[in-house]
Length: 248
Image 1 (cartoon, rainbow, N blue to C red):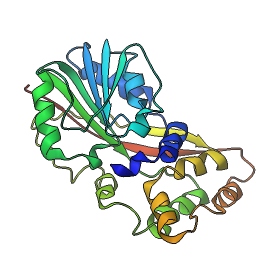
Image 2 (image 1 turned 30 degrees about the vertical axis):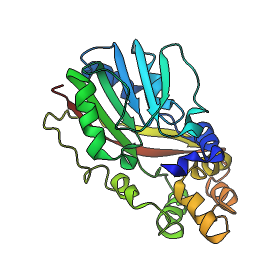
Image 3 (image 1 turned 90 degrees about the vertical axis):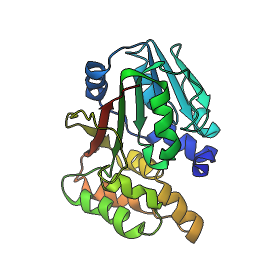
């Protein structure tokens, strides 16, 4: 995850990544067996951890990137810790909930899954989710899809395929699966906020590094032309969720 060591990239993440719906956390709280401790893995700038802190007594939020953690907001119930996904630093059977938001594709699963089993209380909940490219109504959709699939083709990390496949190809060796609700990230994008979000894409950064050109040049104007005078357009990105109860 060295790509996330870039302070500028981390700053962009903190400013422009979309927020998860409140319904996600409402659902998690209906499934979790207790609310003492959650472990948020790959927390980045603490987006999930801060929302979990509204429901859990304590949140242990870990990430490998010091740059990402430097942009995390503090909260009295959230403790940030720099480490990889296979070394939580938590005691055995101490965790009620393990969450991974938009990060599982970067993990070494051979060390992550044993660590989850070690720290989970019997019956603890593991929930993993990702989201893909936002979809729009009208010509804006073709504009964004062209950027993702054509302009940036060959610049995405191979692990991005897990997201494109909506986690259906993820090795997830847990039999006690829970059916999640159908949820979406609904975000109203202006030309400026959409470009700011697209600038967080790793493939955009890879394209610039490889070619010296900016794949987002002129994108804000092109998106504005699709709005038909509206100030913003709503993008919907479906959440793909895998959840299971752990034996501990």
